[in-house]
Image (cartoon, rainbow, N blue to C red; front, side, top):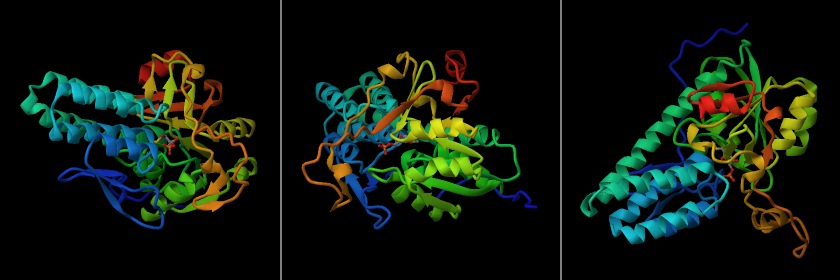
Length: 346
Ligand code: MRU
């Protein structure tokens, strides 16, 4: 029998972004091979970084946009220019709700400030959002870990909903880190998440960095793993949650939810309130980003398909609410997932 470690709460040695003299991003395209921090001078740099997946994960791209607007306001506080920059930033990737929410919040702070104070107001708004996101991750971790009441649990995750995707310990990985800190996590199973391999490159790396026992699997191995009984729960993040509880998340999430339902494994979605979009009635209205076919034709630089082959490459898919056991936000748990329970935690 294992005993709960009497340790302090969950922590991480990993961060996706920081503000010192200005905004810096950990270049996630280079992980796990190299750790390089990139400076972001303003909105054009941030748009490129978000589109190229230098920074990715719904909360992290929202925070990047927030700080990038501050950097832009420092360069030139002209309101018309900042409004145009904000529109470009909000359109950098279409699916994650956090991006548009963050841009709107920082622009509200900028609009309310006189020209000389726009930079300070924007930076304060970005810092507030960053701190709120870190706090949300901790609360999500607590609420989510309480759903798993066994002394030992193995969890399966998809893509990366960790410290690299947020301003804190992560959402799905916030639950993982909380169980780990409580001494109740026996193993994290990480799907690799083709085509861009956020699970293999990022989740495996950040789990190992924090001393979490992690086993990587090809996405195609997940259904048989779920059938084997080795997994106590699936935990994933979200890019946008519609009013009916439909969840857009990394492509492959829907197939995991189908397999989890078939084998009666709890399927838990973890996301801060900044990811909810109650103005979006259902999954049908969530815009799904289609990405360049080169991501599928290649594994990193290596061609794995004929150069001219047509490719289907949606970045995300939508899991219907009936396949989701629970949604966890910093405000609590929606279970069962209905429009009414989602509204209470949004
Ligand atoms: O294309 P990505 O890497 O930005 O996709 C990320 C995901 O799908 C995450 O699961 C989601 O953004 C939640 S991150 C806390």
